[in-house]
Length: 112
Image (cartoon, rainbow, N blue to C red; front, side, top):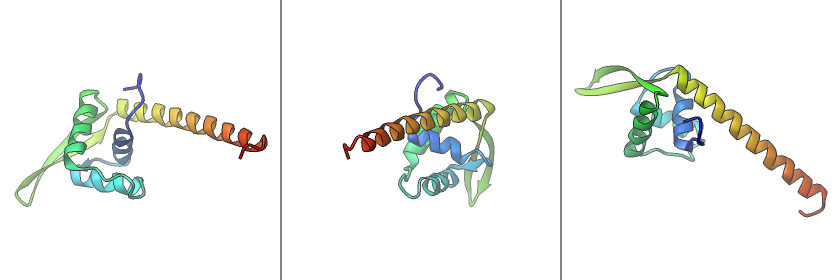
């Protein structure tokens, strides 16, 4: 996933898993919190993202637990996932810097 940019949902799912493994609903809640409520993942979207991240070996199944008669799958960030997240964070920061520099230059030229 390092050769192409990462989708925002993938970026936020990886970010949600940085501190500890989480189950699906926990990931949904953390992504919503991280995005300030701007991104609310639907279950189908979440598991599509998790499937792609698992196929790329950026996340892995950590464990399964029975909870109220249902199986909860917990996912964890892999080392490759942490590396990909770091690369994407750097790429995004560089893009933000470029945009801000250009906007400052535009403002300085009186084009505001």
